[in-house]
Amino acid sequence: MIDMTIQNNTANNISIYETTELKLASLVLSEVPNCSLEVYERGNSIRKIIKILYPREYKSKIAKLEKDFIDKNALTNIYSYNKALNLIRDRLRGRNEKIQEAE
Image 1 (cartoon, rainbow, N blue to C red):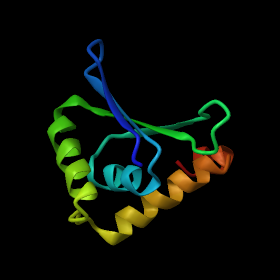
Image 2 (cartoon, rainbow, N blue to C red):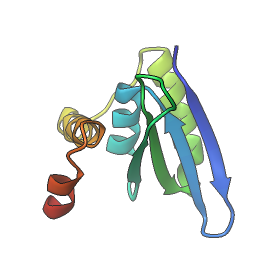
Image 3 (cartoon, helix red, strand yellow):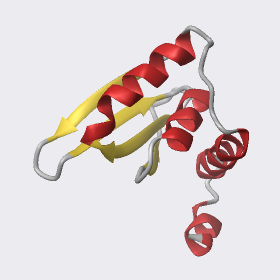
Image 4 (spheres, rainbow, N blue to C red):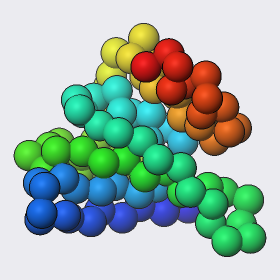
């Protein structure tokens, strides 16, 4: 099961995309510019919530990526995808210190 939500923040033209699916989050990060990433615990669940903040003008692109991902038709640059995947995995494992120093 894929858990996804989209929220809008009208104050600063930022939208929030939340998912528990690691591969989908990597796809979004690799295809949408100017994103930021946060990871949250989900109560006593094993899965964590991946929260992506992105510019609102990319809302339709994210909807298309989500549909393509579900249909297993998503295409992306493999280098960008793997880089995003490693970034998310590091955040999920709690290696924020190394990531912040590298950025």
